[in-house]
Amino acid sequence: MKVIMLGAPGAGKGTQAIKIADKYGIPHISTGDIFRYNIKNNTELGKKAKTYMDQGKLVPDELTCDLLLDRVAKDDCKNGYILDGYPRTIPQAEVLEKALNEKGDSIDFAINVNVPDDNIVNRMSGRRTCPQCGETYHIVYNAPKKEDVCDKCGSALIQRDDDKPETVQKRLAVYHEQTEPLVEYYKNKGKYKEVDGTKSMDDVFSDICAILG
Ligand code: ADP
Ligand code: ADP
Ligand code: ZN
Image (tube, rainbow, N blue to C red; front, side):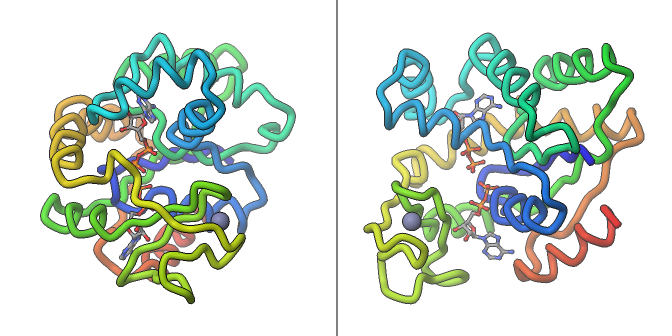
């Protein structure tokens, strides 16, 4: 099964993708996580990606598409995968589609986690992440057992630099301009599904499972 998660930054794509990956036994692939891993390890890719990410802009397709194609060519992707944060532009979607078509393959669903802009700012300002293991929390909706400490690995939680309010506004604008057109793109392909992302995490998950079967 090959699934794409669509949605604004902070809509809950990552939260749901982790649960889906777990339930269906397929890898969760987040381009944002891959970039952050490269930044942490100070790689050439990380240095380039950081300048865009810090400004709330998209990393250019030239740096993103090959990276994604390499990742989905790995052995663990044989039975499918869930993409969280890719594609974010029409050209990115086309690159993936072409690569799959060449193998007589295609994605199964593009699921849009729909959340209005007003809720997004609240979601992002409360998001805390673990710099060590990548786990995501929310100070109100999904608080760690001990304040600012990761339940999983005990590291101190941080607020991502790009989750500061000014950058969130920029990322939302970029989303509407460059990523939202993918809704029409996948509608036209007959792959589009939508869930109400303002519901509780468990309810959103049930709605997604009903789609995936
Ligand atoms: P969020 O969880 O808020 O949706 P991500 O972790 O997916 O954010 O992405 C963080 C940042 O990484 C984005 O704002 C963008 O700069 C960069 N990024 C991630 N995926 C892509 C992509 N497919 N294309 C371009 N830039 C990306
Ligand atoms: P994305 O990957 O789309 O950027 P995340 O999964 O990181 O979004 O979620 C953004 C923030 O909102 C996190 O702090 C997360 O804990 C919280 N969150 C996710 N889903 C919900 C939900 N259904 N209700 C309330 N908060 C949520
Ligand atoms: Zn952790």
